[in-house]
Image (tube, rainbow, N blue to C red; front, top):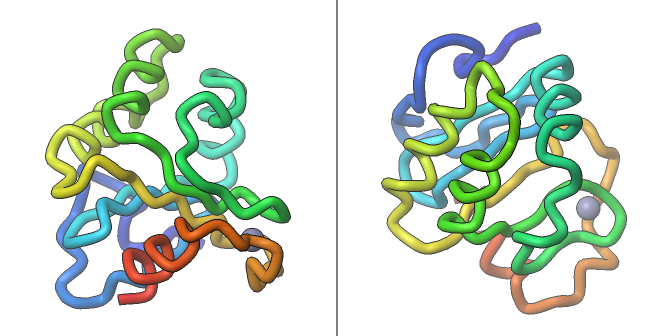
Length: 127
Ligand SMILES: [Zn+2]
């Protein structure tokens, strides 16, 4: 099932920041881009893992904080993804220097994510 972010560009979340795709990218304020399973698989195949641009991450799932500028650089260097421009726009206009990645399918409570970044991620993704 496609969520409200299945088509088009970054969309204002109108108060509901709990975007859930297979993998969602949030700017922590008003906008997000959600990938479905196929888009997520393609994205990860193109960019490799996100470890080099990760600020803080859950060790048990794919939820993490990535550096917005580094994400843009990574996308610039990677082979084209059909929705890369949406991510670039999201990262370029992010109010903080961080993009919050939400693993929407992992049955994970992030109990092992002990880094202080976890609190920032929760604030950004749970509203
Ligand atoms: Zn987790």
